[in-house]
Length: 89
Image 1 (tube, rainbow, N blue to C red):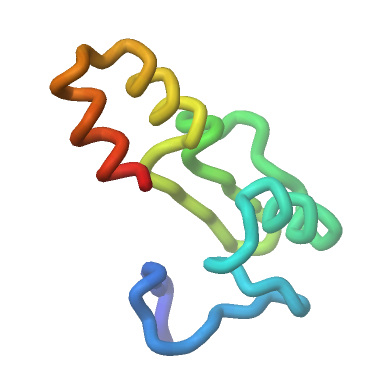
Image 2 (image 1 turned 180 degrees about the vertical axis):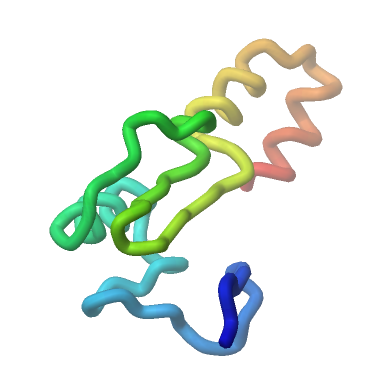
């Protein structure tokens, strides 16, 4: 019996939870839909990056938040700014 499965967005098929494609939807939409079935852990040690639904046995994680990337872009000097725009875009 498998205890844990890790899946990233590079798989060749969609991961659907109750009609929601977990890798195609915005994080806010995924969380809104999953909250209909379980409780979001308010004590998560990485809020905004990790979203745990302990009662469902599901955890979502993302490497960065859009707000963080945009803040980094604002603080970057011109040389950094150019490569960051290419990386984000």
